[in-house]
Amino acid sequence: EAGVVQSPRYKIIEKKQPVAFWCNPISGHNTLYWYRQNLGQGPELLIRYENEEAVDDSQLPKDRFSAERLKGVDSTLKIQPAELGDSAVYLCASSLDVPSYEQYFGPGTRLTVT
Amino acid sequence: QKEVEQNSGPLSVPEGAIASLNCTYSDRVSQSFFWYRQYSGKSPELIMSIYSNGDKEDGRFTAQLNKASQYVSLLIRDSQPSDSATYLCATPLAGSYQLTFGKGTKLSVIP
Image (cartoon, rainbow over all chains, first blue to last red):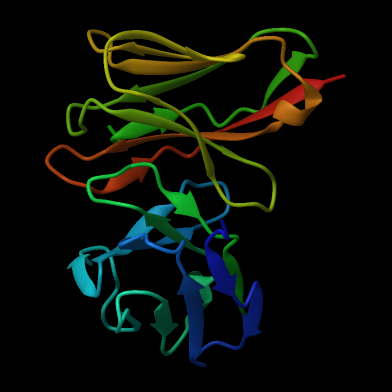
């Protein structure tokens, strides 16, 4: 069974530029999560999808961040414009059902904003 | 107090010893706890879950939950260098499906 796929793995951009991350969850997993992990910290939830519906986006900085999961499968997280403080690892995870805390994480995208 | 607190370490133990990782939590979380292991530069991987008071054993790993004292522990017996990683404690916020993670404890097993 293929795991959660994310791309790109690394991204370096200048501040004020836009950036997008892509995630394809494990096949059949209805719930998808985007987390941000800063160095030396645990992951922090940005948004959770159940199928194509965003059911928990209270932690998403909506002035610059947006996400979509149009067909209930893969998802895109966008930042526009990026700020220096956005440098972090962006992790995508999926789980079969909700509630499920057995979440499977992708390899993450390491974003560096210069 | 943060919802979940962990000593960031590093915790160093000799190979073959028991490694003890601890996590304390506030009243703002539910009573389900999860331990994730994260190797350097890799993503978190779920290794243990515990839902009720007491101990739960899985191979060399034992999770312990003490609700009265509001702490949860992970014991690793016969520690191996391959156990060297950061261990994250996670639990849902009360009334929520949102997992909140501790900062993680970095474990180094010395050969």
